Image (cartoon, rainbow, N blue to C red):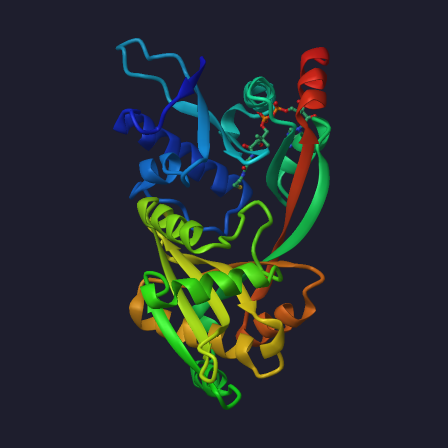
Length: 338
Ligand SMILES: CC(C)(COP(=O)(O)OP(=O)(O)OC[C@H]1O[C@@H](n2cnc3c(N)ncnc32)[C@H](O)[C@@H]1OP(=O)(O)O)[C@@H](O)C(=O)NCCC(=O)NCCS
């Protein structure tokens, strides 16, 4: 049975069942990734930025003979972001290749069409069945990044401590757990607005103005995701010359996610990228002792950032692709083929 589903009002048993399916998917497709935990999973699935909406459906097995609700075997949600719908689909490995994934995409695509959306996008992990799945539905590959993972057990900490201080004169670094301090929000937002050369997925838009930045930090906190920031401040102007953001999600707190890293054009060439990332890892080591890995996503053309990440010990892991389709064409294809 497939039905629209609201994670805010779902039973705890449903949330737990969805978690089981998510972990079965991870074990099948990304066995090196840590399994997810239930903490703040409901919030992770429900909370969105102001002005955004997420619509979800689940596929649930029939109740058992004694009336116990069936397992959640499939899930789709679509995040309505400005003019694009961003899709996520999960099907339990035990019931794949039965057409369920296709049914779930059809529901989301029809809703997007009804809401007047033209484009649909999805992040697809390289070397998993999702690649053949989305290609069979007519999605095309629009952008490819590389995910890299740093195992903190392999880090040369004394070398890292040196990198963290190897920064040109006239700058100092500041570690900000929880987000940028209030008096730096404006300068921080200006830096995010000026520079688009970020090492983050295209489907996660950055925050460019102070209010949007505050909203995005609030949303992160509500979703159970703890942000950490290291800033490089240019002493003469008070400008945020560089920043790097890492988020520790309650759902997989042993593996953190690197978000944006930005060095403003005029301040490049002073070792800021290397220093802020190294300082971040040193701080995380004491702030998050349970953390064992950090993952980051980079455009394959971003050689400077890839070089610094390699020096820090990041190892390329997988391709991470963005696929897209035109909503009307997708609905038409799904309605007219099997
Ligand atoms: C991608 C996914 C949703 C597909 O679900 P599914 O229910 O198996 O898909 P369907 O049965 O509807 O498949 C539709 C078509 O896609 C293609 N397809 C799907 N899986 C495929 C595979 N492993 N190999 C080749 N083609 C495949 C086929 O053309 C298939 O049609 P067919 O079975 O008639 O040949 C599922 O594998 C999944 O949940 N993957 C994890 C996705 C994810 O987000 N992961 C993130 C964390 S790893």
